[in-house]
Image 1 (cartoon, rainbow, N blue to C red):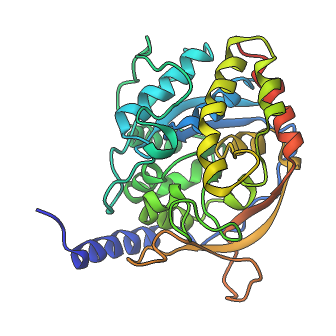
Image 2: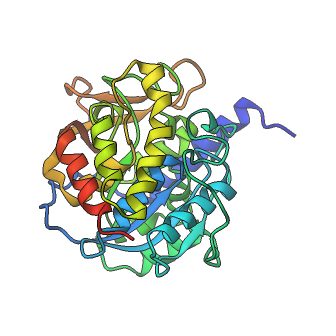
Length: 349
């Protein structure tokens, strides 16, 4: 039986209130890490074309990004396909050492939505999709996050979040003590100056599960957000895609083929000269934060039904006088990003 709007609101208020009681107050975000920082990393993802490129990017930097696992969530396409696509990226990168755990098949409360109009019905366009050889790891992604973060040394694990934040929100609600193991969250999500890409005000990852994003933003963990404000300034061009293809390896061809197909939607929709590679900016930030600029701000999510549903309300000028909880990235070096992406993809088979 469908849940009433009032019942949903009451349930979410109960979850959020209970979680808030068990967590500490919001801590200030950490300063930019040096470009040589080594991260113990979990990547939470909903592949998606740009997610697949981000995963290949990350798996090409094993000396800097010590990937413990990939955890998948429903988002760009349903969970079965996001989980398959994460396993495909692992196979293409020849990284069988990295387990893939499937997580939440739907948002906390809202009706599920997908982005097949952008990513295609399989989640990746431009390349052949098939069933990977290596299966999923046994167990659920939410349980994996709880178990791993509880066992981790204090403030030791970086979590890169490339999709809806459902998995972490569920883990935090069940086990708020796991914040102890988190060093920082670096996530692609939100929009302010740019406007949204799913509604006039909302970015897809947040809109797909704003209740989850609300929980994550109240976690007290240092957070860096790479919103549409920056990803729409880091655009492909025919020359940039040609350089990836010109590497001469299979990974470069795969990334170029994906981009050729993927960027067409945003170029046509926005009238842009190239397309953004949203989720890959998270990996670039982890590898070379000096490519980006932002500042500490207060960010909250509008989870009320209506035109603002899923909007990230970012207080750039500090008018609300609320504590900063996010390092909001607003500027990025596009040539530097594509140089770094090309250099790293060249290391793959």
